[in-house]
Every structure is written in structure tokens, then in C-alpha cells.
Amino acid sequence: MRRINYTFIIKWGLLILTLFFWITPGMSQEDRIIMNHEELGIHSRPLVIFPHNDHEGLTECIRCHHDYDEYMTNIGGDEGKCSDCHQATPGSNPINLTKAIHIQCKSCHMKSAKTNVNKGPVMCGQCHIR
Ligand code: HEC
Ligand code: HEC
Ligand code: HEC
Ligand code: HEC
Image 1 (cartoon, protein in one colour):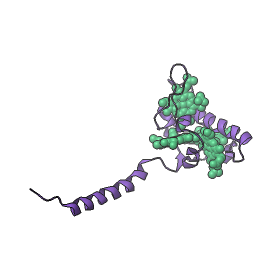
Image 2 (tube, helix red, strand yellow):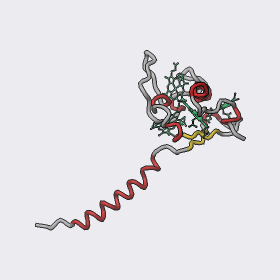
Image 3 (tube, helix red, strand yellow):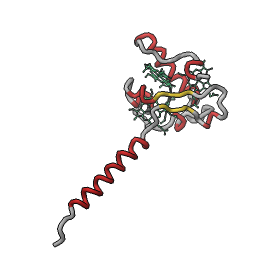
Image 4 (cartoon, rainbow, N blue to C red):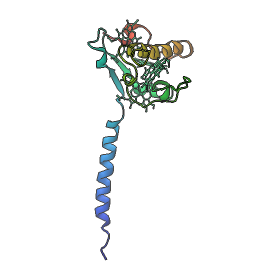
């Protein structure tokens, strides 16, 4: 009968654990996303930096990463890109990409301006910063 080599298991176990925690953060979304959909072509406005991490605590993931069934009930989408469903020019989805993003960002910021001390930006130049 072979003896189990515990040191061997512990050493490799630790190495694999270290690698796991080292790689995992790299697989989640960036803290600050530079919004630059190539579908929109050369941007006419300065690129927008979206502080994703600051927004995660504000509402549920599916509030932004949504999908709707035939009764327009939000059934939650994958945590992917808005452009997975909203095209640059309205295609199968009636709301085009720029519009979808503007509506989602601004409607909440406008609401938060009324109810919150911390309000999000609503003016063009506050998001598209030169
Ligand atoms: C809450 C932040 C926010 C505000 C306010 C805002 N935008 Fe945007 N805008 C964005 C984001 C995010 C995108 C998507 C860019 C991307 O994903 O490539 C975008 C995209 C655009 C685009 C298409 C890409 C380009 O640069 O050609 C235009 C044009 C634009 N915005 C103009 C405006 C104008 C004009 C206003 C003011 C009336 C405005 N935006 C206000 C965040 C904002
Ligand atoms: C306030 C709106 C909002 C909330 C809340 C939110 N996200 Fe996002 N998230 C976005 C936007 C906008 C993008 C950029 C999408 C794009 O580039 O089209 C994004 C991008 C991502 C991406 C990268 C997608 C890719 O393929 O590039 C992941 C992963 C993600 N979010 C996960 C989450 C998770 C998990 C939560 C909840 C803990 C969450 N998000 C909450 C708006 C939000
Ligand atoms: C899995 C597909 C899918 C993804 C991904 C998706 N949407 Fe949508 N979105 C839809 C559908 C379907 C509708 C309903 C369109 C209609 O009126 O028929 C919709 C509607 C909207 C509306 C109008 C209704 C509302 O909820 O206010 C906005 C704004 C919007 N999307 C923004 C976004 C933004 C911003 C992102 C990225 C964070 C995103 N969507 C990602 C499928 C998607
Ligand atoms: C569910 C509501 C909600 C949605 C959707 C939302 N925001 Fe915000 N956002 C806020 C609130 C509330 C604040 C102010 C509180 C804070 O700074 O944490 C804010 C703050 C910001 C700020 C300023 C952050 C800073 O550090 O000064 C930027 C930039 C911003 N949002 C961009 C966006 C963009 C771009 C989108 C769309 C892709 C978006 N937000 C969608 C609620 C929202």
C-alpha cells in the first residue's frame, strides 16, 4: 500500500488556490469601463468612463442587464454587452444602442437627482468629458 504524500498535496493545493485567486479578478468586469462600442464607429463625442463598481451597490444587476419576455416582464439577461441586443441602427430590437444607453443612464440619474444627495450626471459634458 502506498503512503499518501500529504506535503505533496498541500504544496500543489496551495499553488492551485493561489493561481485561482490571482486569475479570478481578471475574469470579472473592469471597475471602470471605458465605453467604446465599435458598432458606433468613430465616436463624435469624448469616450465615457462608466464606474461600474460604484453602480453595483445601487441596484440589482438585472435592472441594467435585463431581458424581457413577451409580456415585457424583466426576466434578466446575461451580464454581457448592451450591443448583444441593441444594434447601432434599430434592428430586431426597436431601441438603438446609443438611445438604450442614454435612456438607461439618464433616467436613473434624473430620478436620483430628486431623491438622492448623490446624483449622477445628466449633462452631455459631464459624461463625455473633454
Ligand atoms: C449619463 C452619461 C451620459 C450623458 C449625460 C450623455 N451621454 Fe452620450 N453616451 C454615453 C454613453 C455611455 C455612450 C455609449 C458610448 C459607447 O458605448 O461607445 C454615449 C454615446 C453617445 C453618442 C454616440 C457615440 C459618439 O460619440 O458618436 C453620441 C453622439 C452621444 N452620446 C451624444 C450625447 C449628447 C449630445 C448628450 C447630451 C444631450 C449626451 N450624449 C449625454 C453617456 C452619456
Ligand atoms: C447601473 C447599471 C449596471 C448595473 C447595476 C450592473 N451593470 Fe454590469 N454593466 C453595465 C454596463 C453599461 C456595462 C457595459 C456594457 C457594454 O459595454 O455594452 C456592464 C458590463 C458588465 C460586464 C462586462 C460585460 C462584457 O462582456 O464586456 C459584466 C461581467 C457585468 N457588467 C456584470 C455585472 C454584475 C455581476 C452586476 C451586479 C453585481 C452588474 N453588472 C451590475 C451596467 C450595469
Ligand atoms: C438580452 C438582450 C438585451 C440586452 C443584453 C440588453 N437589452 Fe435593453 N432591452 C431588451 C429588450 C428585449 C427590450 C424591450 C424592447 C422593446 O420595447 O420591444 C429592451 C429595452 C431597453 C430599454 C427601454 C426599456 C427600459 O428598460 O427602460 C432601455 C433603456 C434599454 N433596453 C437599455 C439597455 C442597456 C443600457 C443595456 C446594457 C446594459 C441593455 N439594454 C441590454 C433586450 C436587451
Ligand atoms: C440605477 C440607477 C443608475 C443607472 C442605471 C446609472 N447610474 Fe450612474 N449614478 C447613479 C447614482 C445614484 C450616482 C451618484 C452616486 C455615486 O456617485 O455613487 C451615479 C453616478 C455616476 C457617475 C459619476 C461617478 C463619480 O464618481 O462621480 C457617472 C460618470 C455615471 N453615474 C455614469 C453612468 C453611466 C454611463 C450609466 C449608463 C451606462 C449610468 N451611470 C447608469 C445611478 C445610476
